[in-house]
Length: 256
Image (tube, rainbow, N blue to C red; front, side, top):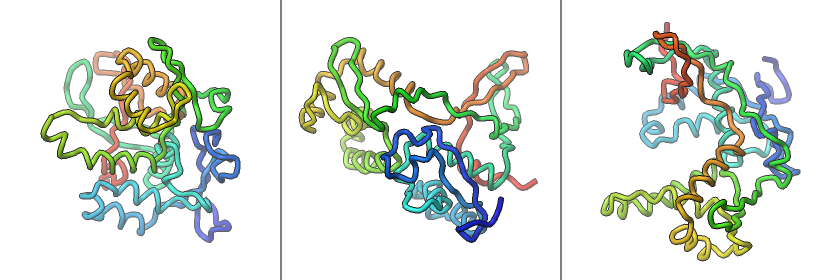
């Protein structure tokens, strides 16, 4: 931690994407981002009842700590955002994260301390990103060719806004349209046709379940991210991979 051109302590965090998904003229192309250490200002954000009720408290926190010029949270690929969230937690409260988990073998509730500093970035192949955030995938069953992008935080916000328009319909039918809405936003063209009406019709009527499953597996493979899992040895001595729980208390550990 040191004073710098910003006039307050900052750290440089590495991005899982290595910057390869951003335009050449983006500051994020460097593969790093500057963030400030959390202060009382950020704790005000974390304890804001209004922000918590709106479900935007983590968003406001991350917006507050990003200091790299000309970079907004909306610009960030979701995996890079996750890495910044983990890095911010470590800088603010240390790498020890005390949780309660259910032992997979005994089903008993167990106290456990996760070491956040041991969470690694997913391995990536630079060849995947030779065209930046523009990808092409041939669906294995139908052989249709889809062009798509990986979603940013800004994209997720827009998808959430679209979903709000469907809330009334979802209550009436009991069917969520979140998956198809996401596909319609993410897919940029089908067999070279980038007309949105054509893409929407494809997703609703021609995107076979066999292909959607493989497409989602492909997305998971190429999406840069931090591995939000840790190794846990059960009371029976078996090794398990457990998801890191990310609630409000992730940024607000209990005082010891």
